[in-house]
Length: 433
Figure 1 (cartoon, rainbow, N blue to C red):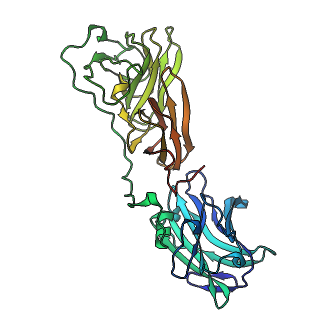
Figure 2: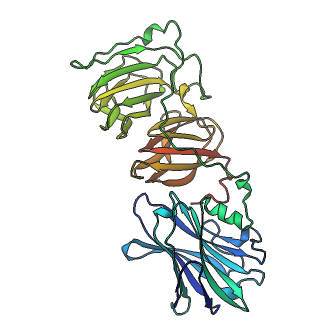
Figure 3: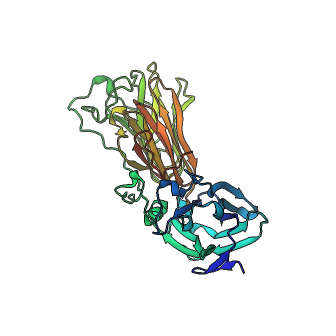
């Protein structure tokens, strides 16, 4: 009998095997699962980083263990395959530990997880161990192949770790340099408030005074609420003009003519909307035709941030298209949050990047269904832009940003976080893809 339960063991012949970490795909938003193996000595420790086989290091130097990739079968079944040849494993290795790690969730959300080993020569099943008690773990030690009396055996372990693959590896004596000290768990993602404006100066410039009447009873007004006395970030002059911020309130679909002609550059638009109706803000041509998107979102009770590139030739005109009450605030890019450390937010946002080239770790929580879109685009002086990162549904990833100054426009249907790291220091455990 090749199927065993947790704690059970089976004798093996020592022949070359193919070992699969199998689960059923949960579809969009489901956690990503990866197989891994650790080669352990008689003291219960790995001898160094070379004794780990995982997504960033798919083959052991002795070629006795290697990760060969994943395959998908019928019914959404997915398997990550390892090849293990006990005869080619160094004598100093006493155990080959097979594990799985989970990204973007926990193993309690992974359906039908099991380990299966088959003969590499005949395909005959040698071991089958199903995990049925996973809950909050982000890594699981599924089982181990170990030496016994000149031969090999397999033991089903099923030990879970809430600290992911780094925590499991640490239990076997390995910690990557960037894992010291151990990172603190991230704070829960929560909606980020729209930054408050700086105190007004007593007298705003005359050209900033504007008043706009909306159609019908839903009049929209704009009044200069003050001039920002100084930059809150280190963006250089020329990225966007400084001016008193303007606020407009209204209901439903309305066009706004600010009457304000500003020098060429970027402007920030804060959008606050009550209810769950879709909202879209666009710029308008002089003939009131749609021109460029500023921001759009379906988030309930939205507090988001969008970006406008102003050509400097004509007064700024905007259209707000939604149902229910809304307010927008137009302000300088000098007031944006700086991306100079870990940041988090909820929904659309814009950040100022003024530093050197940097690697970035992204984390996206998704909407209430752990789905939705998350993307980051890079905008530079002159209005040119390109995508830096995007993904569908909850998960993590990494990328890089060029040297600033740049503006980072974030499109998101839920909570997100970004963490900068020096180039090349993405970390031993950060997936390289």
